[in-house]
Amino acid sequence: MKNATFIATFACCLGLAAASDISLPENRSPLTSIGAVEDFDAPPDPEDPGSGGGFDAETYFQNVVLAKVASCPEGVLREFLAWSRGHSLSLIKTVEEPAALLAYAALAAPSGVLELVYRFNATQKRSRVTLYFYSGDGSKHEPSALIELLKRYDVASLQDKLRTAVACS
Image (cartoon, rainbow, N blue to C red):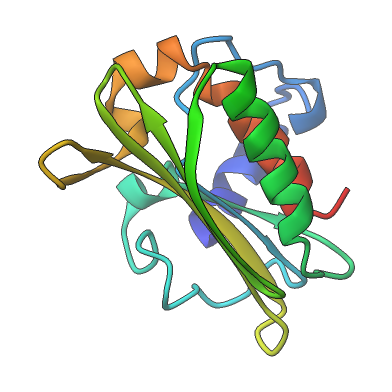
C-alpha cells in the first residue's frame, strides 16, 4: 500500500489532477478485489490472495479507507444481484452469513461461473469483496485477464457498485 501512497503523492506533486477529478476510461480493467479498512497503513489481509505481492499485485486490489468499517453483506449481495439480472445471468447459489457472503453466477460466454466472496473481520477492522472466475474445467482465472468477460458483462460497472457496497454506502 505504501507504493500506492508514493504514486499518489508523486502524481500530486507533479501537478496532476486530484484523484476525484480523474475519470477512468470505460474499458478499464476492473480490480479483482476491493476492501475497506480503517487505517491507511493497515497490514495486508493474510487471507487475500493479492497480499504479499509486488507492484503487479498493486493492480489486483484496492483498499478504501473509512472512518468505521462495518459488515454489510446485504448491500454487496444486492449489487451483485442487480448486476447479474441486468446481464440476464442466473444466480446458482448464495450462502449468506452475518459477516460473510458467497454468491455464484453462471455465465454462458465465456462458459463458467463467476464467484463473489465477501468477508468482514471486526478484529482486523476490515472487509473485502473479491471476484473469481472458474471455467468449465474447474480452473480458477483472474477476471481481469478475461477480456471477453470484462466487455460482455461490463465488469467495470460491477466494480463501481461493489466499491460503494463494501463501504456500506
